[in-house]
Image 1 (cartoon, rainbow, N blue to C red):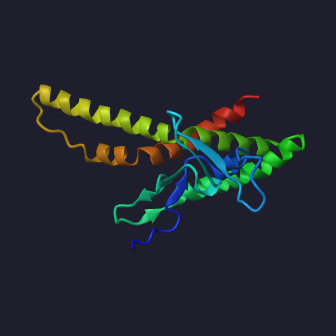
Image 2 (image 1 turned 135 degrees about the vertical axis):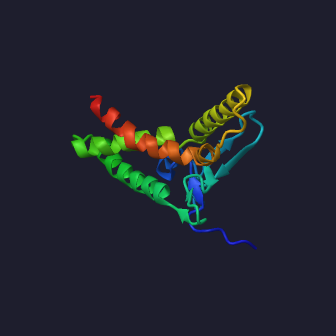
Image 3 (image 1 turned 120 degrees about the horizontal axis):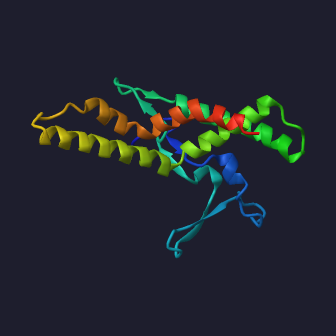
Length: 177
């Protein structure tokens, strides 16, 4: 049996967010759960927030030597913890500090960028760019174009999108009052 590396199952929707969607009528003695309903409707099941909306190594960066870099997963985990701390103050109607607001803005930016659809959107765009570049080079008689760097970017599109969004979007969100 293959051993799964630690931190391979990564949440595309954070556990702290999912906990708010747990069924309030969870029977005594059972763990809280959220309901999963298929897009077409017939498949309905309940799952714990810990096992919901995960993807294998979604935010893991694979280094050229094959080593797994977990900086994005660790960053998301820290942001989730920061958010939970601020959320408790929001629920008590406390005045938020600029530091609290910055944490909320960073969490919101992460929520925008960490979805499966967001990462795949950028993977698809980069794939089209690579294909158009190759077609244009062929049409102009330039032969084949080296696309290895673009291929690496396509492979890491979800991670690159998340890292770039976390670098740029929180500051823009913070400026809105």
